Length: 342
Image (cartoon, rainbow, N blue to C red):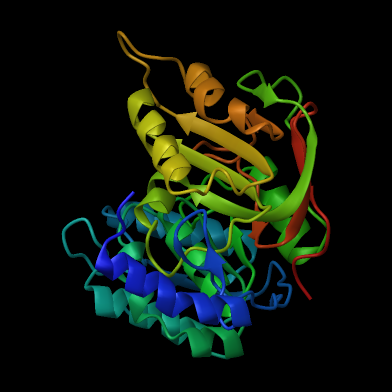
């Protein structure tokens, strides 16, 4: 097999560095591995804490819905501090990129703010992750909470700073007893997270039995795949990957899992958890969701299951991204092995 001159020169130039340990080469994805960073745990909060509200992705379009969200959060006991641009609009974005990023940076620097809650997901966080002040975030750690498009922020902040953030409800979520209890257990009481399926939950199945441990990372599948090739994804080696999605045809889930496979990510993980794929239509002449998992996940020979309470639906758990976890696929549950807050 012939090797191009450029490839040969590149390999020769990298080899001494790799051998000397100055860089790490991740052969599975063909790029230098990200240096491991010590994890930073934020402080716990209370139901009386001051919460900074930001819109880093899409806006809440109806002012009445925004007002209802504010009243709900105040009813929980929180004091609220609104980001300067939290009500901005720019098409499907909640204002200009620089302003959405500025709101997030400002909330981390504001000593009166105890935690940061994103009002919703949508789209836009990938557009601002290169505008964030990661030194400020690292030096002023506090909980950042949200899901869906907030996946970008969770992964970027973990990778760049080591700060543990929280894949959990957004401001406009349904703050029902299930969602509220998981949020309280992790962020207020400071318990180690235990995640079991509710009694009677039927939308769940085992892909492959077994027990696995590893750093828990992931989020929304579509958003995660859109970050591949960037410098903002964490190391997936021996990790437990959790995913969810909404409104995607099964062939698109197939396509995105194929992307994860071809990028080398699926071959690195020790366990796999898919929450719910809400409104993911199989349609005519389609594989089923179960068949797609049989094709892509079962051959990995790792513990895997579908149906965890991670989704765009009403009942949602709060997961500290980046902590060490253990999963039992046969029982379709998982747990975090240490507290997520100080």
